[in-house]
Length: 401
Ligand code: PMP
Ligand code: GLU
Image (spheres, rainbow, N blue to C red):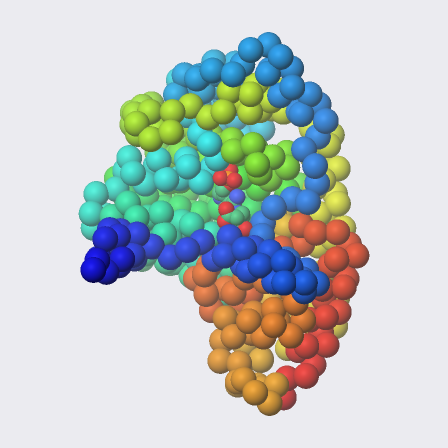
């Protein structure tokens, strides 16, 4: 008889299931059993995709865009992305430096496959988005965290970045606005990182800007716009968050040409071009008025404020003040060692399990994001759901002694 574990590759045996997707799955399973679960675990806007973007996809299907596209994307989309990079980010990626993919997740996967040999290191700002860690490992790389906690608004210092770089460092990877913290690096902070990286010519930068349009400060800063690192920066972005297009599976990167070519080669052997009609709709999204995107951002900002004021009422939660994305990442150490009479809460995993089983509210433990002192709450949910969920959490946490 074959042991199923021996059939599977070591690669997949050592791969963790995506914790965000796992928590979303658990919420669905509990709901199917009849429980009234409020899931604040998945980072997915609850708005519908704006109508003009949907109309563009219907039109594309009518017009016969039902075939393979060039692997790196339809020319009208790569041109629209190149112009968007200039317009919004002051970045100079030509259309031939753009690779469109089936989501920003695939862009990051392509990059790791293209850049990493076994033992190469990737400096990852922590807390980090779950999949960075696993994709780097899956590609043979070694993730090296550079961590800052809630007391520093999750912003590592330039000195920490400097100290983490070794001769094996291939690139630095971070998101701003950040998933899971909502932290936004301002111009001065980004300049500090750029100055460090300017001194390390062999190190590339992968800047994940998928939450660019969900930014409550007055400015989004792209690290690739700093001249000293411009030629070594790969900028990843996508349509999922800013245009509420998670299911359309559409992302992209701008990269030095040789890296874009390498990623196209990989993608050409793995998935080919992204869905043709998604690409047509994506081109319309980028070239149309951003009114619906701004309206969603304002709704997220209002919810952020509601969530923060409600969390303040819960003793022991030390919440950060996120300036972007749609997450809040409170530190929950004050609850460690407490019990409901049955289980002792040892860490954020235990606390999330307790909140799920006693309040039917789905969160994601910070341990999946490199910070076991926190949990992530996604406020991409209706105001009513948020109010109800936080009330339930407050009651459940109030029972811990
Ligand atoms: N980067 C970050 C920081 C994310 O939160 C996500 C989650 N969607 C992605 C990339 C992947 O996005 P996509 O849906 O375009 O693959
Ligand atoms: N990026 C979102 C999240 O962090 C969506 C789920 C995923 O792809 O991980 O929840």
